[in-house]
Image (cartoon, rainbow, N blue to C red):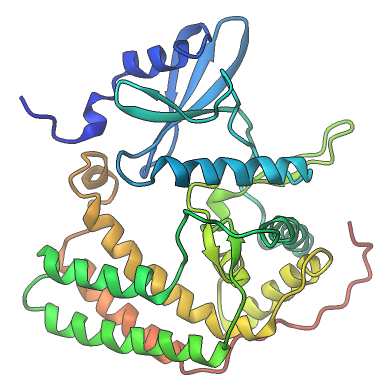
Length: 342
């Protein structure tokens, strides 16, 4: 029988044996964690704290691209930026077992940040500023850039050839997507020659964990994964943290940038890119779901995908983005605080 998907071979025994191949003794406890792009497990160990094992999706990244991610995490750790780097075991951070590449991490818990709290937003801004201060030191050589071609043009062409878009909606979606990508290109032209740096790349609330202060530990935010890290404008790590109407987003952005500029300068021209980057993500996300549809986990987790209603909503969404990109760029609100800053 042919495997439906490569991950069908990643059985619990394979996961446990992979960890034991690194010299650790598993106690049989195995907990699947919330991840779709990769497979991530908490693995119990005998006489030691559990570790988290990430098994990389086959054929997504090259070894060189994964190792660049690991090196960036180590750079951040050395600069005392709170991230969780891969463990170095047997002199390596990237390992292989029965055709799967994987890495092991210290288990680090936390809760979602309270994005309605101005001080939390400012703290997050400082955190991102520290990441970008390190990210500007050098460029990725192997990991890709976030640009119109890779996040817009290529996903559009893939979707049009994939057969996922219902035939009766394809003309409307094609027109809306073309207009949306024209708007994206115009936004990048207005922004001008903005700097690209190493970013987290997928900085939304679910990818930030917050720990409370305990003893000598001040707590605060940390990232546990840099899997989507790539070269991008700095604003890529901001726009997913703001939501609501324009007034609310301006307030939130103001708090984030107030903390950010303690550690990094922000180029205001990048505000032209907020809705453009949102548009690219919408197109890329549709293609991501389509590319992963052969993975049995995806139809279960995303049952609304590939329905008539889904693609109708996407047409409306793209048309709304065309209008949003024609509005003046989002401007962070000027803020004044009586409370002391962290």
